[in-house]
Amino acid sequence: MTISYGGDESQVADLYLPEGDGKVPVAVVIHGGFWMSSYGRELATPLAEDLARQGIAGYAIEYRRIGNGGGWPATFEDVAAAIDKLADQPRLDLSKVVAVGHSAGGHLAVWAAGRSGLPQWAPGATPRVVLVGAVSQAGVLDLVNAYDEKVGGDAVPAFLGTTPARDLKRYQLASPYERLPLKVPVALVHGTRDGQVPIEQSRRYRDAAVAKGAQVKLTELEHVGHFELIDPDAKAWQTCRTETMRLLEP
Image 1 (cartoon, rainbow, N blue to C red):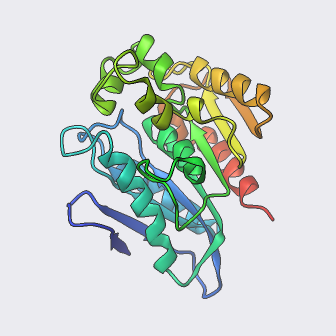
Image 2: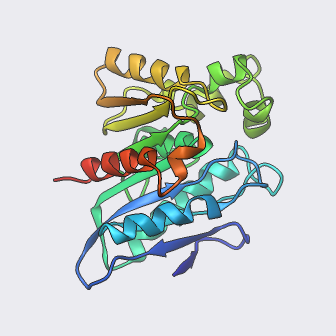
Image 3: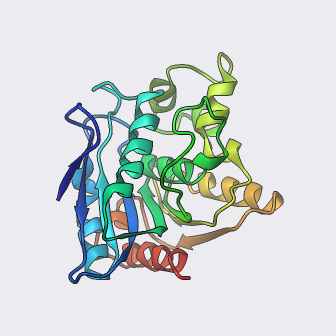
């Protein structure tokens, strides 16, 4: 079913429910594409459908992106609103909700998992639905480092509308690396041959999380690139799915 959580055409999400009538856990699937409007939730749909076949409600969300009204703060507000809309679905077990995101979606997934720790005035604060974990598939997790290293070219400053030198506080609110330590576990999956998002993004986050006592696990996939992680037929996605199921265990 398609759910609308706002008036914009991008403020929609598709919920794929497993067969049966009982309560089910949920995986919020957030697509990547460096937050740009040329990429949409069709990247997340196959993963959400696969999760539904495993007994997990797959929730492929869309959000406003660079080029169609997104960026700071709209994209963050949209992701938060889409997740909170789950509270209206009676079949969902809201005590078991995780986010799974690829690339820029990995950034949004881990950010969303830390919403309860945001200042009350920040975009996305005071969640109705609190995530119990996040799976980052080659996520852009350190936005300051991504800006410095030009990950995605100029995607990071275009997304946040500024640079770290001009508004470090915005980066501190938006970047998962800056929000450590997180209160919930995070699983990182990254290919060693990723040519889009350097594996150092996941390694930096892992090292900082460990140093601050956060729960984090990094799985490095040898000889794997960027897009295998969102191929439902690939072993790389199966690893991500396994990590998702692990985070949803009691």
